[in-house]
Length: 146
Image (tube, rainbow, N blue to C red; front, side, top):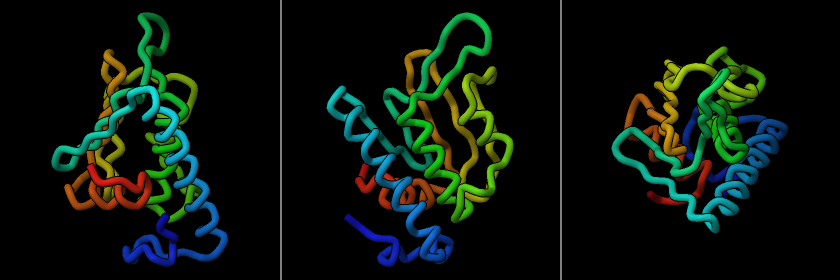
């Protein structure tokens, strides 16, 4: 398993306390990913988009969209990836991490993450602003090559 000191991205160079938080988020994301892999969870990457086969749920009433717990951990990883901390949490991320939300597409519009889109078949797409960011996030936070 990679450690924070092995991460070469300057945006991820952080204090020891933040390194601990980063490692905890990575472990949570990996734990949830492993659990869902057993249940046929698939993560794919096409250019600047990461797709989780089971990342959200939909219902026909109220605020219809909800992220799975595994996807919420991945969103927390996105926040850490973007800001180096989960203390800074722009509104689009609070919408995603809340209980339910109304929009199918949540425009994040940060430096690295463009949007998060839910589908009725439970697929979740995370669109990055560059293909490089998608690859780096998968390798760093999900420790896999897709």
